[in-house]
Length: 339
Image (cartoon, rainbow, N blue to C red; front, side, top):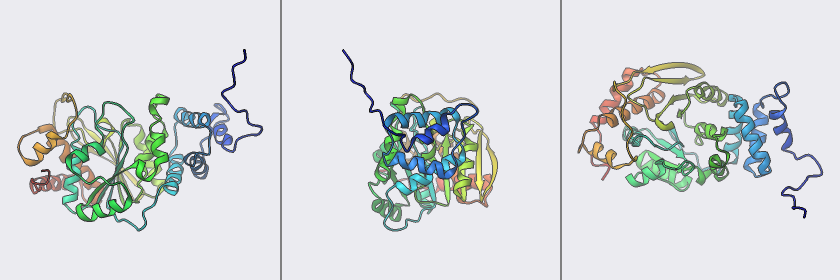
């Protein structure tokens, strides 16, 4: 008995096949895509003009080859063209990408966002959730804290005007890219999608924060940001891949300012390793913010994260200036905000 074929055998080459071929011709024939090729190929993916087998092959060939900054810039170009655009320009000071979720510690970085918003900086946050089990994601945590979570660009604009802070899920402005983020359990590996979303900066904020899990990706992020013309950006290895400094470790802050790169070392402020929490939660954030309890790790994490953000928001400030400002913002915080 013949088993029916699972595939439809095409009579001619698929339009996406050349991009797979460029990446998969072997050690001597393979080359990276240029920015236009990358943008064209990823645009086809976002418009669902490729077959599933092609998509898997393309993403994994990129993973094995390792994507270039020019390729990532092309992918971002395609996403910005494909995503839903706000009806009117939305002014924002800082782009904060949040796609990893917290696993080992509470999401202290949320308190850094609030401090910056209280200081008058307009902070736009975008992210995704649900692609890795056992993590607390930003959308969940912000909702539990009563912080602004939007469903569309109009709500983002309103929330920024009212509170200088807004989170918009990726699925609300680029659902096709959100769906690609959910492929990790199926593929068993991260793909370039997990990298490009961090530099998406959908509102083209002049300052950008990006976190990496593997230190080797820092140079790749900076290369892509240079291609994209990002004025000010900071990349570092954050806790669980989120934008949160780990106070028990020295952190290399990779900074980009008007096309020039440098590195700032933020020394550890806690000498010993800190044990992970059983389950990340927002209740400890509320207690610390209100002054009801002390949490040495949480305080150092949020202050360091705030200082790192100020490095890109205030390019003329040095690290000590940013640390001093971070501490003054904490001392002057509205302790009744998280009711």
